[in-house]
Image (cartoon, rainbow, N blue to C red; front, top):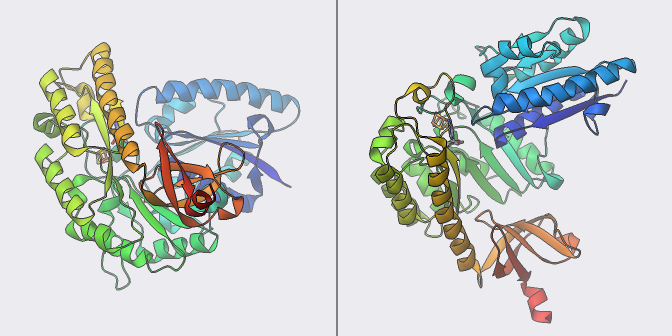
Length: 452
Ligand code: 5AD
Ligand code: SF4
């Protein structure tokens, strides 16, 4: 009998990917997509713990789903309610104590055991909890299904690495996602080939610490991300490669060289720095200085002069003074980012910074965040404006928002839209950029310009 699955995903691309894989492992059990929770035999909330209010958001959603589950039960329909992801990992027991109507709690390392847990939950009244870090890797168990990740499957995400050994003072990832683990090259290459066969033209390699990838290569020895990018670039039909998220410490020379030598590697890099103050970087346990970062950017730009840069910033880490905050603004000015993410420091229970002295008042964090975001917004607008007049290769991924438009991405990850026929979808074509908007560009194809 056909069953219906509804998955709610919060957080990062890793979670988007994991949600797709959970749907994959459940499909042999007869689960297909539901229209919404009311119509679902199983609901999975795939949670994210990285910043504030994760558990309040979860419990408020669970409260709503409890009513849905009750209403369905009155009609004679059972609903399996599962909580997955990093909040499940960190607060599994509390979830079952506060929301006993939850049937399954599972951490990110155990998705391959989901079918077994569903069977158990269906049989038993008691809830099933599985948040251990198993000795075997979940990469060994997930079915190798081609899972086109986005519209038309033209751009796909492929997880090659999970977990982190860096233990930044503020971050829960080493606790929730466990130690760094790399997927073997053969498995990555096989999945990439299947994605390309299924229509993917761009693949983004994912991992919390993706450039720490050191998966087993063909001769049984560990390889590096630079090597993997070169191997992936051999796949016919794969036009574009990206990878995220990287740590500055793991940007080795070979990976930098890949940006110069491998044409499929896009000239865009998300490289979180978090702060521009050496004292705060040390307190954050980042293991690099502001100058290390700036020198790295110089090397990257020497390899690939048009490289666009993105980063993550945290304002208001415990102890951050005004001068230290200004050092972050100084670093931003020195680099010039095409886009970036910025956050107010949020204490995560169990991490070293949460108990550190010198917690910054919320209003002060707000002020710093607004100032920082003003600067980043101006840099993004400036970057977009500098694209006007250039002809950029754009991978067309779907229809645009307005009639007659198609839309795609520039090499620098900017959304680009222009008037054009739908049969361009799936192609990479040159587009002349005519106008810059806050978060996107508009343009025209050469042919269209000639007729205009
Ligand atoms: N508070 C604020 N921001 C955080 N990040 C991670 N943990 C925290 C925290 N406790 C940010 C970092 C990281 C991004 C994914 O989220 O900038 O790079
Ligand atoms: Fe978290 Fe990234 Fe630091 Fe690892 S490197 S602890 S994932 S912020």
